Length: 130
Image (cartoon, rainbow, N blue to C red; front, top):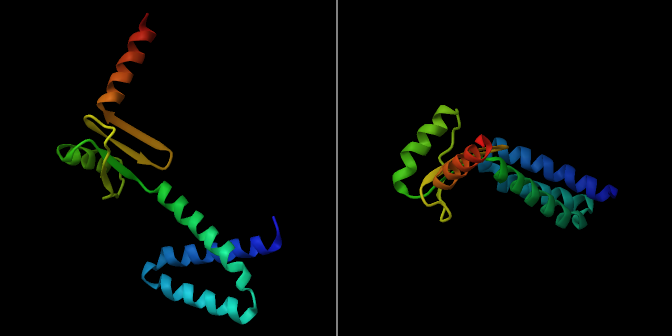
């Protein structure tokens, strides 16, 4: 990894951390970084910083808890299950691949209460019995 990419990663990490703590000032932080890069003659770092910020945002999005439901009737049950797990999320999406039930994805955890998940658990239970 070249030194310029390491420097760009540092800028991106600082920008991600600052914008996470105060998201309403993200534009101000970006303007300040642009001014700084222009003053110091480091504008060539901008594409690397942009790419690193996109990766940071993707990682943050991938680690946020998401509740997937089959239809609106499942919303209340899924939110109750999330509350029992102390997950503070209101990000609920309707997943077209679910026939019924819900799934909660949080970091490295998957809680599956869908029809398919229940059928798979029943199948594995039956084949391990005999």
